[in-house]
Image (cartoon, rainbow, N blue to C red; front, side, top):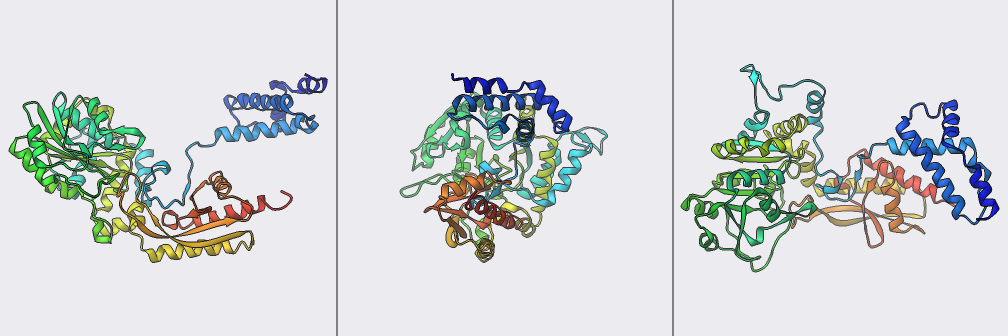
Length: 475
């Protein structure tokens, strides 16, 4: 190590000296010690690494108190910032798993705030003046909307499936079509959930074709359940055959076996009424005579993360009594949001207008084109010849493992900037505050207005303005 590096290393300040400098200036008044000390050590370590790796002598200003205190302040602010941040979804994927899935309706937020900040009758029966059940808070409205005899809710649909299998079929065989052994997000698979529940998987049929006789031939003395899993996150096309839910219910009745359906992304709205692909509704499953059905609360329903279980009273009572129920129960905030969301479904037209997931899925192409034109005009107003924005006819997706075959016509804005790659634009937008998440196609940064909120158009315009200014000559 040469003498210059050794001299600079000796100039590195100690932690105490930086604390003293920042305290005198008042810079560190709002920084907890648990954050401040690690930040100071990290700044010193970074400076030491620069000295050792650099072939040139570092500028003396790097060692000044003002410079070091400022860097500690910046690093501390970064540490204390919320890790869970608001993002702008410009991908066109409505139920985006990585970006928080479904947005809640603004109409439910007041109820959430009230229940979260005040005491509530979470487990208190106001009529009887004694302990009650939290599940009763949403059971009545779920039964009203779906036609189910009984209902309960747990923390997510995977938990709902696990709980049902453990209650109904632990130690028994569960017959399911091989073509329905789906894998959901995070590599969780139906066979794995079944193993954890204590049930024994018995596959029937083939990947693309399963017939009623396959179920009947597989039934034995140890059969405990017939399970149908809706393949909501993929589709097999071509030479296919599947056993319908009514046919499976008929088999179940004939052999005195309960029938369960995992709808995955369950919906209370018939999307075919809005020009979209037909998706089986919760009401239709129950009308077919299924004994128990499970589905998610935060996908096509447009509510909070939850696993909803509907079915026969005797089965639901057994599920409620299962010790696993306590481990999977939902909290008061989830209940508050779910109840408020379900109340909107009492008027389907209002639900489609007010629940963001439904509103975005059914958004007319005319509205999207207007938004796209508005976004393009905002970018054109930047009057920077380096930037070119074009309108592109493309497709949006439902997302969240829902409606895999549904292509929603949309109008996107594609952006190119001279001497800035699409990857560099994407990175800038992703690191913006708030982050703007789009996609790259044909060397363009693509933004789909279907999943943008009105106030976000101006934010996107400002982000591009900042990017152009940052990349101007001399910067």
